[in-house]
Length: 285
Image (cartoon, rainbow, N blue to C red):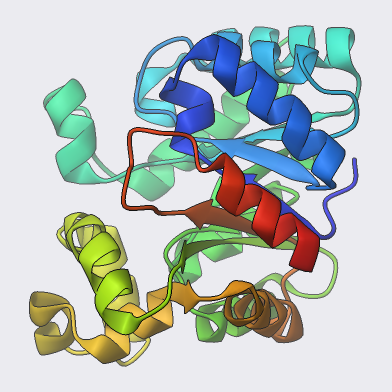
């Protein structure tokens, strides 16, 4: 499983038109991206993963991330094994505890003691038949305690909404052997005003989730930064500008210790696949 280079993190591939998603995945494979990352907010995520794997030849398909509150470990293990049997070593299980407000919106009262819940879910994956070995899974991790679990019980960590400084801290926490796989949000645009118009509302929704807010406060941002979506915070979390500007941010993550960076593209037309933007970035990256 090649998890070097650059990947694409995309809700379009998960929730967009299935035929176009398959066609876009095939093109991303041909363009040289190393992995496709798809979110899980409910529904048949393994069916979507299978469709995208069937449409491609080389690229890795990763869940970014599977919400453990929405799935039974035995079902996850069976589905992961079926994908591996059909498509070889191209499926990576990204697993996370999500956020209290989001989990409770789907299944009220389920979110509790997330660290223990992660350990229990991993125990069940270990003992399932077939199992999902540590080498075939990564954990969504931001804080020190979840990063420690990722170092000990998974292949590494998939981090989301983080600046390169967090990537450096994650690498220190995980050591040299584990994978550090950050997501980087990006906007191809001509000005700060254009970037702000596209990205501020999107970013504000995440800043209201406690896990992200706590992580950013640990990194030295202030409550005022979060409340106002300050320029300092916006520029740290969203790479914007031309292809070279976004490429520089990818290289900053790599210099900080990332093995692989997956790019999430925001555009002024969020209802459409950003295929032209993916092509432009592929030519630079």
